[in-house]
Image (cartoon, rainbow, N blue to C red; front, side, top):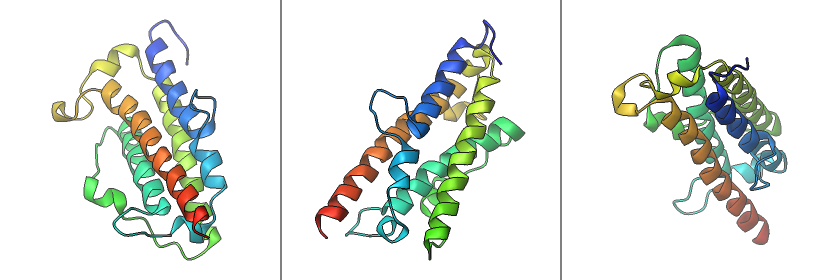
Length: 161
């Protein structure tokens, strides 16, 4: 939905899409990165460092919270729950978790495109969370941050084999 009143929203949607599916200037994206990780590799836990699976779920959790808010107007989430991924016992479990995440991202991108730019500066659920702009850009930044960690963990895991 393109108009003169949603150019900022369209840019945010593009950034959200690009960090997940490619086209950003870091030349790194979630879909490609996760497609090159096997389920047992995603579960490797070292010391007090989160696993790739945990980080992936953590990123996806906040995508889901934002999507739910944009679709329903209900802001429901808890940081404590964002690290509790469902059990992964097989490649199929891993694929289902990552596929669900990427589908939610596609839906979130479409919801962001519908926003009027004026909405971006309204409270995101509650003033204590800041505005839409801060939260949506925050998800992009958060994704880049943890995507870097996932790539480092993948390299470390493979170097030790």
